[in-house]
Amino acid sequence: MNRKLNFVLLTCMAISLSLSALLTFNKPMVCAASEALEPNTDIAKMYRVEHELKFDLKGTSAKLDGKKIRVTKAIVKNGRVFIPLRLLREIGSAKLVTWNPKKQEARVIMKDQIVPNWKDLTFRMGSDQLYTSNDQVLSDVKILKPFLSNGIVYIPVNEISKLGLSATIAEGVMTWNWSEKVIDVTSKMWEVDKDTTSFSILYQQDMYQPQVLLPYGSGGWVGGNGKVTEKNISMDGRLYNRMEYTENLRPGLNPMQIFGISSGTADIVVRRLVANPMTVPIKITENGEKEVKFNAPAHGYINAKVGQEIEIAGTIQRPNKLFNKITVVVQKYVSEGEYLGHPVFKSVESKEIPIKEDAFSGLISIREPGSYLIGVNSPNYLLYAGRNGYSSTQWAEFVVEIP
Image (cartoon, rainbow, N blue to C red; front, side, top):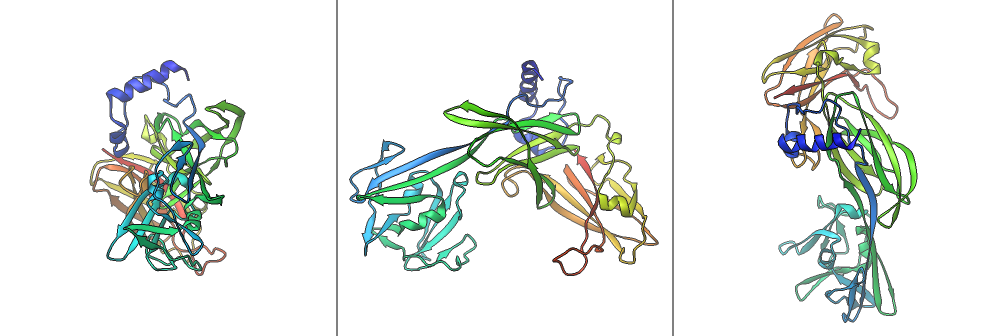
């Protein structure tokens, strides 16, 4: 795809809906360009930014990434070094440091880009234990007791390793090292008029390869690596590899996550435009193909109205005494900021439809505008290793959009 088409995309986006409006949404955006609007460049770049803090224990000098700064002096107590907890905030590695005077405790939340072992920890004054975000004790961990001095919380310096930083000391100078793992997304959304989309991601050569994950329903993600197509790309003082991905798309909105094993996540959304919804079949799983024939809905992409009744019906192909009901799960697309901080499908309703005489038939209706993924789940009839009793699986899914 050429640069002229990219210009058309940008123009269309500027005069149509804002990104936030499109993601909350619900109606396919109409654009003058007739081609699929896929990006023709890398959609993201994953890299690491190294940081170093040096300061002497006398409190006379400090440098952050080679630049002089002022820091609160560390305290040496019984031969052990304690550092002011607020220093983590001052150097930009912590997102938040708070103090609870009633509980006499300080809480630190690290930046996502640090990707620490523990992102959220609480230190209680005079306690040798650490606490997680849900106020649970970190088991099998004992620390030197934090304390207050002149209104400042001090913690043992070796505990910053749990927060993603390393510390060393030599000749009275403390050195901290840490890195921010950045996923810089340049194309957060785009549209295509086909059932797949292709794109590429640059990643720093000495980092783990990024994966692209897609939601298979509420609460779960699945995906994998792409294919390395180019190596040793020199850019901004780093060496990168390029990975290309081709992902299958549902009709409508497709939230995805770029995931790095040690680099956190970043979100993208791809909308699949469908000119004729009747050409999209209901998606039936391998287990569904074996067990059931669906008679309704007739296709897998439905443009409906609020409150419109949608029929779900089928016949059992292999009778089973355990087949007593199907469960229809309605999952709504929720945009960034509304749920878990990233676009996702969230379960909002479920309905059971009985199976009688090897057939089932029932109706669902949706009461609010939005983009919905409807899952049709089987009865509990499968045995899985390591599980007690019978479990269900998904037999089918389809998409409903209500403007």
